[in-house]
Length: 184
Image 1 (cartoon, rainbow, N blue to C red):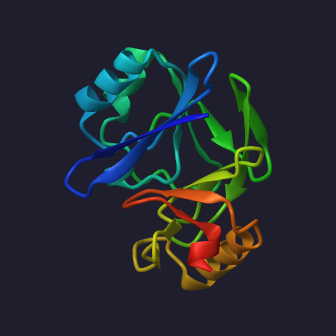
Image 2: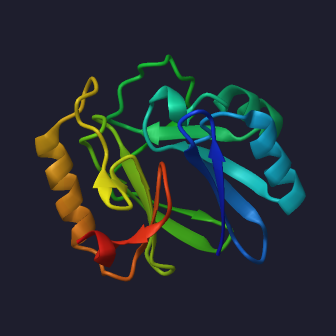
């Protein structure tokens, strides 16, 4: 599995390319800003973006979405419980527990509210990788004081994440990667 981290925008939101080593088929996660920077990375790596996944609908995770969608002709997906704060035009909704495939990689959607009502995490079980959006960070958790946020729901989402194996590598919406074990 290839994982490219592209910090973008004033808040240094992590945009990710998660790709199959063999086919270069990929998903793009949270194109938060600086569309040209993201598109350059896609082109230079020869990645074929199959879908764009938004972990949650906050401006710092979607600012480059329209341009990237237009350039890559990719479909956009978001959690089925997420509020449409920014009038996003999406192509589908992600449901808790659904499994998708990109190239030879399979990932499962985990509904993880708290930071926002419809936040999702992507879990690659075989590779022991999680893309956590703004739910779990290196030495921290996402804010719950924004519209739709809930500390009670955040605690339940963290319990679900902490039930996973300590070896899982967590790629957060901001900052460096960590592991479930470190965050426990």
